[in-house]
Image (cartoon, protein in one colour):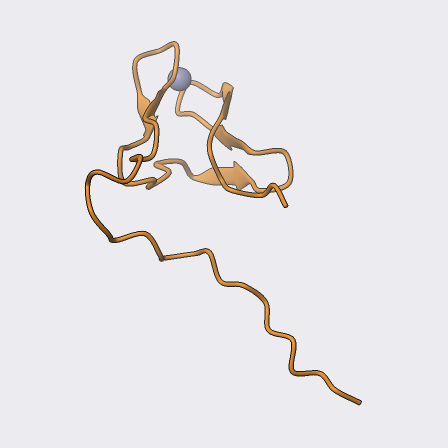
Length: 69
Ligand SMILES: [Zn+2]
């Protein structure tokens, strides 16, 4: 049985040139930047499957978690 297939690790990559499309910042309606330009999601709670993060205002905000594919 060949189980050599590795899961592609998307987490923590992307430290390359700034010219490469940067991650889009996501700012909640309350003004809280829930995802910064480095792709860091500033939220206590993230639903990876739904691609949303819980803001401090208790609102679920769509964030780029890269779950497509
Ligand atoms: Zn908010």
